[in-house]
Image 1 (cartoon, rainbow, N blue to C red):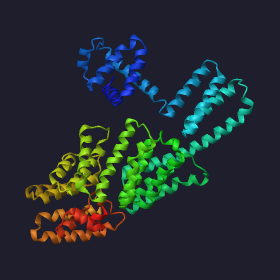
Image 2: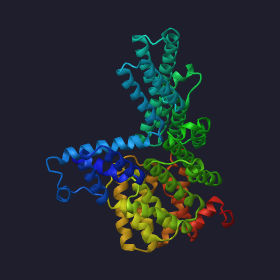
Image 3: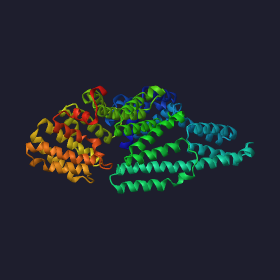
Image 4: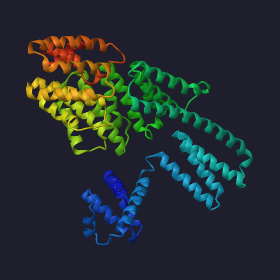
Length: 517
C-alpha cells in the first residue's frame, strides 16, 4: 500500500469512536481465524497511533513483510465496511443504497416482485431525504424489471413510471443548473475574492444574469434546488459587499430547514455553513444583539436538535463556533475578558484536535493576535503574528499576511522596540511592494510606512491625523472598505492621536458605553 493510502488507513482508525471500534472487532470475530492478522494490525495502529513498519513486523511476527501491503489494504476495506454497516441507521442514504443493492441481488435470483418491493422502499427513503439521483436510479431499475419480465403490474405502471421518470429528470436538470451556478460563484469567490473594482462588479452581474435565464420557466422548487439558489445569492451578494441581501439569503438558507426538518441530519454541515454566513453578515454589519442571539442559536444547535454528530460535523461546528466566538469579542470590545476563550482555542490548535486546514489555522492565529493586542498583551500578540510572518505562504490570503505585518509593526512600536521597529518597517515595506493587488488602503499605509524612517518624533501625531483623514474617505467607499475588517486602523490612529487605550477608542467611535456591554 503506498504511503498516502497508509496515511488514509491510520487517519481512519484514529478517527473512529469507541462504539465504531467495538463494532469492527465484533464483526471481525464473526468471520473466523482468517481475520486475525488484519485485526492484530488494527490493534497495533490503534494502540500506538502511528505507523512504523519495523515495529509492526517485530511485534506482529504473524505478518510477513511481503504480506504487509495486502494486510493493510484488507484492513482498510474491512474497517470501511464495518463503519458503513454501523452508520446505516444514522444516515438514511446509506440505508437506501443498501436496499438498492438488495434489490439487485433479488433480481439476479429471479425474485422480480420482491425486487420491486425493495425498490419501492428505496424510492420512499430517497423522496424523504430529497435524493433525486438515487430516486432516478430506483425508477430506472424498476422500468428495466417491468419492461423485461411479466410481473402482473406492468399494465397500470407503465404510464406512472414514464411520468415519474420525466418529472425526476426535469428536477435533476434544474438541480444541476442551480448547483453549477452555486459552485461557479463559490469558485469565483475563492479565486478573486470580493469585488475590488467596477470591472469585478460588472463581471459578477453579467455572470449571474446569464446563468439565471433558465429560472424563468421554473415554477416550484424542492429542498436542494432552493438551497442551491440561496447559496448562489449568498456568494453573489457577499462578493458585491451588499451585506443586507447577503444576510437575507443566508437567513433563507437556514430557515429552509424549518420547512424540511428531515434534512437536518443528512445536511448538518450545510446547516452549520448557513449559520456561519448569517453570523458573518451580522458581524460585518456590526449588528451586535442579532449576532449574539444567532451565536447562541449555533451553540445550542446540537443539544436542541438532539443530534449525534460525526467527526466531520463536530469539526465544522467547532470551527464556526470558535470563529464567531472571536468575532463576538471584537464586536463587544471585550478583549481582556476574551483571553480565556482564545487560550482554549490555542490548546485545540496545539493539540491538532480537528482536521482544520492551514488557511483556517492561520486565520485563527491572526484573530488570536488581535485579541491579545486589544487586551494589551503585546508580546503574545507578536508571538501569534510571527506564526504568519515568519513563513512564506504563497496560497494563503494576501490581505491577512499584509495586515499581520502591519499589526506586528504596531505592536513593536507600542512596546518601544525602536530597533525592531526599524526592521519591521523594512519588512512591511518589502511585503507591500510585492503585493499583486494592492488596494487603496494598503497604498495609503505603504506611503505612510515609506515616510516613517524620516519622521521626527514631534511630527508623528500630525502624520497620524493626516493618515486618518485619508483613510476615513476610503472607509466610506463600498469597494475600498474591506481591509478595515482585518485591522481597525482608524481606532488605532484615534488611540494615538487622543492618547487613550485602543479599546476605549473603539468604544468611543462606535458609541458604546460600558453599560451597553
